[in-house]
Length: 449
Image (cartoon, rainbow, N blue to C red; front, side, top):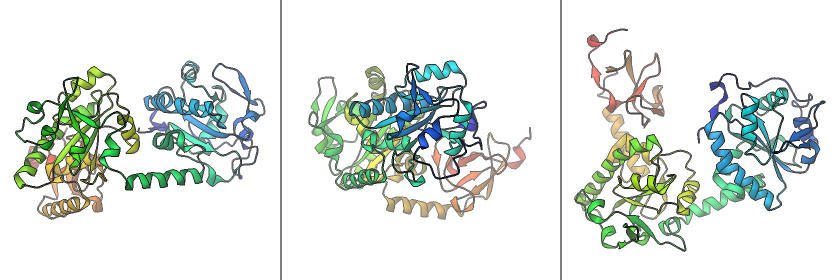
């Protein structure tokens, strides 16, 4: 989920240099919740139904300060899909946790409509000064943003500023958000990565298979595979392909959905590269093989069926819990995303999409050694590239850049895909394209507008 820069929406609350009760330049005191959230005229917060709740009732609790707004879709999505469920789970378990909503909404109606979905507390919409001071104190530049404060530890270092990321990554297991708890979770993740296999990633006690198309459709490029030979018919008309038959293959986990326009645009490119890799592996006579598994974020069965019918690879069943578990396990923040697993089931890279865009089928098997080799080849080839070009559709001259000479990660203005390394960049307006996307024009053909 990409945070929204507050400066991008005029009229939103701007950071203020004002301080709440004159205490923000000092170490937070033991009564910091009151000094942060109350004023000389108001000692209460609002509950979901409008009841006034005294700020002093928060003392002794782990407190989340939630900066959000109704006008921004990622805020609404995080609120309804993540935060409400986590909050209700923790409250039902008797956890000593509370959240206070700090609104960046434009008007009272928007604030009230948004707050109606929130089972926690809120600062009144009319208290602009407190909201400004909190935005300033915690340097809020993007939303949604969740700050976690500990009840006993009043050191600045104890303040957690990445609560949104932690809940997306660990869920309620992150509670109580202490340094010790987060270190435990980091260690558990490390151990999980080290013991990661295809079997424990892609199966559960109810299912040990993936779904595939009938063989005639799945391999229309003429490539045969052990996947086809080991499959069984599924009741929905798909083939049941045992996960065990994929062990030893390089595997791509493709996170996408039909509602995602970048995913719909990237899928045909991935299909082409997938088929070329399959053919390349066969022609080289390698024992290795390549397969892709679709991990769906579609919203209903019909959309899933329609989208998967365009794909020649395998899929997890629609609605299977593994779809969300894998997205969380690999910290997928946006789609489409292509995670590459090696023949041993360990993660090779989470940036398969970018590697496909940069190197096409040559990216296979996506290892660090292969990428290093390709980067050296491109560096060598770049020596023969013109230092500048005119590109059809752009009036300014483009200069050749690399990461060491003013370039870096970018989105190609021609194909709308990711890029890094060598590129042609317009120093006047920032227009940037892959070297392979440049459609060169003679300088004399350019017409100033």
